[in-house]
Amino acid sequence: MSPYKLVPEAVPPAGRRGGSSVYTEMIDQFLAMKDSSVVVQYDRKPSTVYISLKRAVRNDPKYAAIKVSQRGENVYLIKE
Image 1 (cartoon, rainbow, N blue to C red):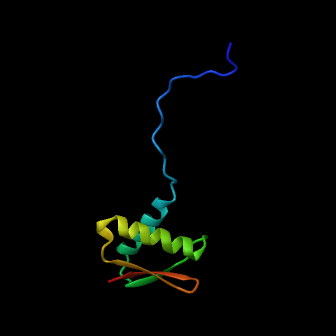
Image 2 (cartoon, one colour):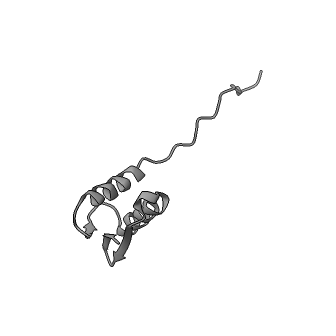
Image 3 (cartoon, one colour):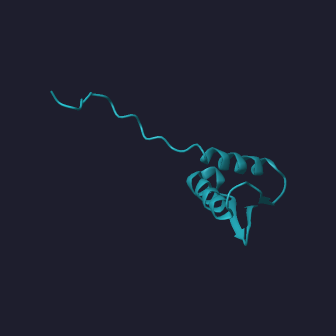
C-alpha cells in the first residue's frame, strides 16, 4: 500500500489580499471631500502606500481625475 493518498478536489480560486480595499476607501473618501489635495497618513511605509494608491487609481476609470504624488516621506492625493 502507498504511503500517500491522492484525493480529487477542485482548486479554489486564487485569493487576493484584502489590502486594496483600504486604498480604494481612502480615494473614495478623498473624492467626497472639498479639498483639492490631502496628505495620506497610514501605518505603512510611504513607498507601499504610494504604490498601492497609484495602482488603485490606475485600475479604476472613476479615479481618472486623481493624481498620487510622493514627496519625501509624504504621500499626497491631488484632484486634477
